[in-house]
Image (cartoon, rainbow, N blue to C red; front, side, top):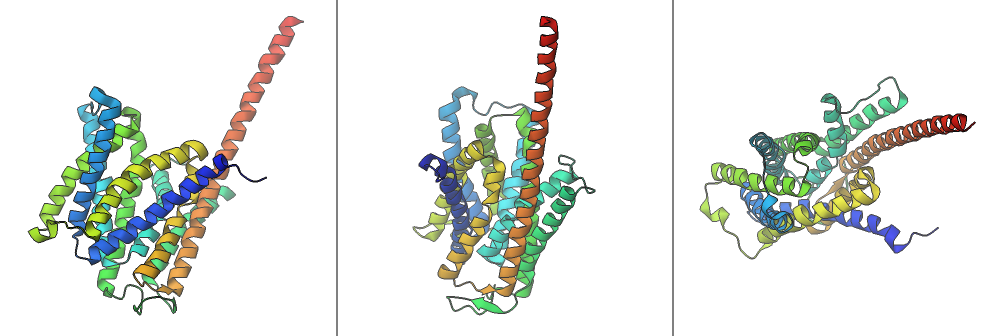
Length: 350
């Protein structure tokens, strides 16, 4: 039975979200290729995002905006420092040393890495003696193995529309390894940030204010990071070029619009549905990078992507199955309680 337009909307929106993320990595790489400092880029990006989100928060929350206890403020500050400021700066340098496609590939390990950290922090449970638990572990290993394969194995060249002769041809082996390591650390920070947000949101439940405050604090933190690493005043100047475009795109489209679209999709179809489409950002980036940057597709690229996406879907399938079993068990429990109540009423009537 064909889907109605309303039924198709979540699919169209989630495809748009992943295309936006794919464009983010590409634009970031192009801007840095044109001389924009990664540290300055992160600072300006956060300035734009803060202006948008704080304005929206003030409009909708008014005087209540940003009233927070000192203990919660410290927690939000630390989340901003590691989860946003640290992650974005590590990603910026990592992409500068490697390629936008590798950045998108490591981004796709987030669901598996987040689940792994949740297990280590005892927020998730893996029953290693069950088939589902073993499959989860295998999925995480395969997913991370795919990212490592993409990063460190090239193999024979398959396709290229540009003049580059190998993946990462503008980078030495040393900078490529350094960049890959920084992307990996950035991913760990991002995953940890994702896991720990849930605890802070229990004390400060407004997602809009929580996000706006993190952006504001990250802007201040990013300024000091940029001052520390970028001393050339010429690299702080912006012109009407791809640098300004990438800053506006990341600050407005990625941080502000995508945040709303993701929340809408999760409300309509759930978080697993959103996560299932994550590899589209990688596919989008591969295609755009091949056409616009002339990046090479190699055997290592293909093997890495296949392993990464395969591992991701194993983890998501297990998680979805587990959640489905929990719902079925709860429904059976509720039905059993209803039957007991009905039997009690029938007995009293007799």
